[in-house]
Length: 152
Image 1 (cartoon, rainbow, N blue to C red):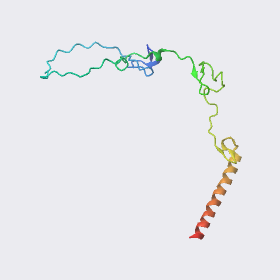
Image 2 (tube, one colour):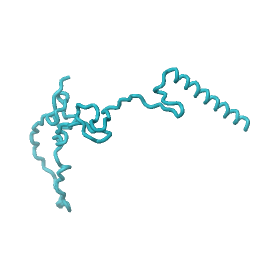
Image 3 (tube, helix red, strand yellow):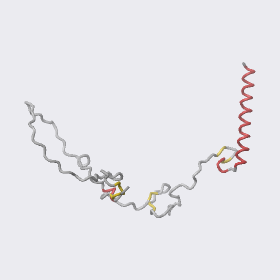
Image 4 (cartoon, rainbow, N blue to C red):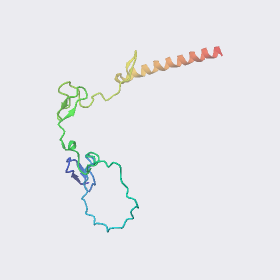
């Protein structure tokens, strides 16, 4: 697949794309449309007047075929989520607070009170904890059934 570059933001776009997926600039070549022949339109008997015509809004009525000025500004860095500082793109960690760009701990915490973090335990330790918790739950259910059966 061949790619071209967007003239507004310099993003890679597929060849023949109609618009840029990054800044929404229209990329298709504008075709000149021949003028349509004049058609007679029936006019109402009384002229219709608007009580208050609004002036054009510069934001809402602006053309949308150009990228906003913000999209043309190159990124100077990434914002740190810890302290909010702007860090250069070449750095992997914030120079002010030391927070990494991407988290280094890819495992979720499986910490249980009184037991510890199951994700950081060895396989044998997890098996022992599972057996003990299974026996405790089974004992609780048997005791609950015994008490419930003697009450009824």
